[in-house]
Image (cartoon, rainbow, N blue to C red; front, side, top):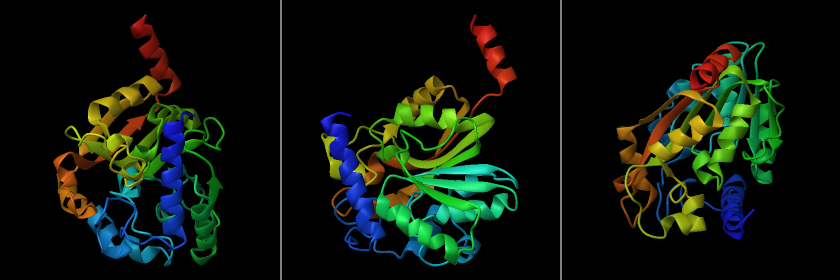
Amino acid sequence: MTDEAAERRTAVRERYAGIATEQSRESGSCCGGTGGSRDSPAERSSKHGYSDEDLDAVAPGANLGLGCGNPTALAGLEAGEDVLDLGSGGGFDCFLAAREVAPDGRVVGVDMTPEMVEKARENVESNDADDVEFRLGEIEHLPVADGVIDVIISNCVVNLSPDKPRVFREAYRVLRPGGRLAVSDVVLTAEPPEGLDADPESVAACVGGASPTSALETMLTDAGFVDVSIEPKDESESFIRDWDDERDLAEFLVAATIEAEKPTAERRSGREEGAA
């Protein structure tokens, strides 16, 4: 790992450790720069696309108001599916996913921040979620076996990674053939201010690490995914503007839904024959 990547990872881990232990609330949320929304976690989640039913379904403590969308709604989960959440935080999306895949499905959350994993594990009991587990690990090196997951979800976390191509290769590895990726994240719509992408604090604030749609499409395709779809959510401009008091982040940043599939063996064979 380069010194720059290590510095970014440290900044992200420290920011989220502070949020998990309620020692760092100055930004109001995980995302944004010097100002940030002062809304409650529930108010922020409502803006991100969660329904009142979603908010009421999970016991207090799991919803930290993090993210920029609702990947569980995007994923179209079905009973019996096995789900992996990249950057699971306090476990909110995992507990919502568990309701959809019950009674035979399971949900695994992976987070690199020990304080977040500890908090999420504490929330398992209060949510009576025996089919949910949380593992400490990096999304570039998933602590998950090959080909055991049906659906991968993530909420505004991939942009934090210093090695996004590896994240998507790992996602591809752990998915079963025919499995799918359903991610909410931020993407660049214009050139950001100079130096923003090199600032660890901006990266940790979900701002400096965003990539353009075209770059993400290439990363996903190179990893082996098919049916890649990245759809910007114009309505996200309203809450993205709340992330920073000093600049209008909506001038170059927007939330988006990112979907892709791991091809079945038959479809992969057909692609290889076509390439030949």
